[in-house]
Image: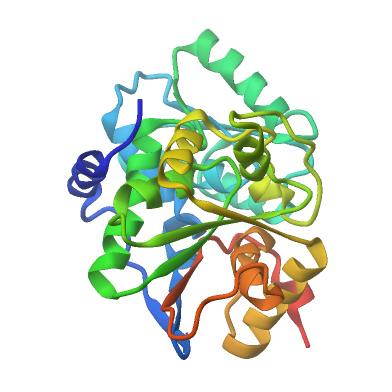
Length: 302
């Protein structure tokens, strides 16, 4: 199922009053940051997860999600707010700050495997055993439509030419494509160590890629989602890659220069500008989506 603007608008009505309208920060001439990391549970995924759960149906077994961290946090938050139990499968490599927050949100946490793909496989089995509603972290039409409400919101706030989006499994990218008008350029930014979109566009179809690097906890999908890929291919999305060192520097610069605390996956989008992986034309109005902040700020001190 391909998500369209009508689906995004329906999601906006469904989740109205349950999500935050996040701020926009003017960061320089023709540059803005969308501060979506201030969303409930610390990332954009809360939009999609609330839409997914409200689209149900949810049995007494509650909801199950697999996640590198952010989708699980969104599932735990959304389930709690909507009166359901949540069970979240994460890899053993998930950051401790995210695992601890899952517990605080009331979710039962199961750590399985070293990558998201292994946690995902275990979660699917568990959902089939219990009858719980399985909430895919990114390759689900209701998730993507909910994420797309960020695009609707952004376009109501600003006039811009280009938006830079960090890409993992394609759930945010797909939503932004569906939620924005066609005259906006969308640039997907990935780490070289976790480049499922770039590899899929090169191969003409989703393919498995190795996953590594500083942003693997949030952008570490082994394969781009089918829905996100089809939307990206149809929209002719630009795809660029950045090195881990550039991601670390972008995260540090966001703190040093703007006092914004984000996770490495989020900083990936900004790294494209700092490195020149994406070079705007003179006068091009650019928005960088800063989509998540579930991170340990201890290493940001200067």
